[in-house]
Length: 281
Image (cartoon, rainbow, N blue to C red):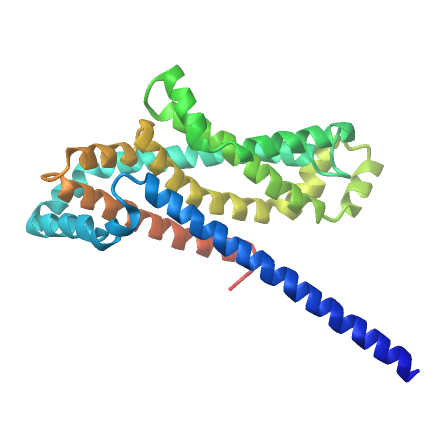
């Protein structure tokens, strides 16, 4: 018995030693590859990345200095760029609403036990994978060539990405729904739509709304970023002020403050609503 225990212990120690060796070799290779990657990036960087680290704070310092000398003009800047901020919020809200509605239909079509056409579930899930995989900025850039600049490319791009993301999340919520109410509705002759509407939706609706609110926060940031590629909103105004350079840095700082404050406010309100919907204090 003791001999068998010694054999097992020896084998265990040998296995642990072997794994540590493999982990050490893997870590060493990772460090070498990472260091060589930094070296290649440094060689290809026009100004030199490492040399530029010392001047990392120069640009923020210039912006803050100019903004401080024109701080009395900030109220006027806030009024000037407030309509652009509202445009960004409208883009995010409309995109979230459209994406959530499409996501609801996709989620029911992709949930086992709920789908009206179970054979289509794998195809719907792959479709949602594609919708999530394509970055919204890529979609917006393509649509800008079709529709020119404006909010339409941004709304389509964000809605497309949102539908794929929320469809996946909604489908996971659907999988946890209690199916017993569906049996009761089926016994009364209810249609598939009626079973979903009265048997599943009341169970999953709070989580649906919670995820949609979370996505709204993300879409506000996305709509601001898409403004840099000509999709309108406050991001477009920020790009213009940054392009002008010195003399307009106070405008850029005002836009930063507006956008940052709005995101913080929306995050806090959304968090309160989501906690209330999900029963958290």
